[in-house]
Length: 304
Image (cartoon, rainbow, N blue to C red; front, top):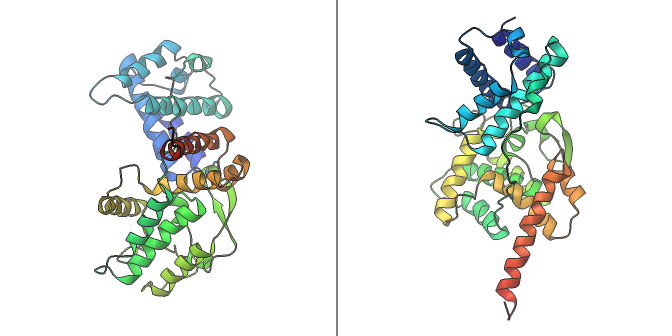
């Protein structure tokens, strides 16, 4: 078996058995394909399954070094993700294709300082939602759609892909939503009355007939609304409102978490609502909330 054939088997495993998202599969394909191309150039020969088994730690380090330099050097976080994909590939080779390689476990990626999430403030979140439906030159159903999507992201803490995965049969929204997130992990999130009302307004105004299994949110011409269109929407709104580049659709999900934390919600509950596999991921929001408290102290205390 060639290395390329082994890669195809692994990607098929991710798609069919692990139920990984198309974006995850494509990201893994890019990372491992680049690694295999390097090995072929480095060794000057075709790479087979047997070749992958005898790759040395020095060769893997040479690959990582090559990605740090050149015309398009990878940042530390991207380099770490590339190494993670390669390790996942080797684990599959060991478990499924009988080709172990212990050398890759000896290679460490670059140290990455975890960055704190960058949420928008409550006032900024409200401003984005209000502005989304405030253009008199836009068809009313489009404004209602944009407000419904942004309200979902903020009110339920959804990722863009999760919000856009809702179908017509899900409306009217129940007391809670069943969301299938990253890695097929299922969670239930409460639905606020304001969120339900925003979605109901959109459904009443949307001009396209929707079957129960059709995706709920539609683009201008009736096709499914894409994540890139939501990102472009928020990019335009933040320009109108004078917000920084950190005002993104995902920042509304961050805002959901930090606002709950600031109101006294415990980390375990927020972890469940966000669908985080690890509590350490959720703990990043404590740094954001602490920073907010310090700013409030500095602004309000007479001796600050």
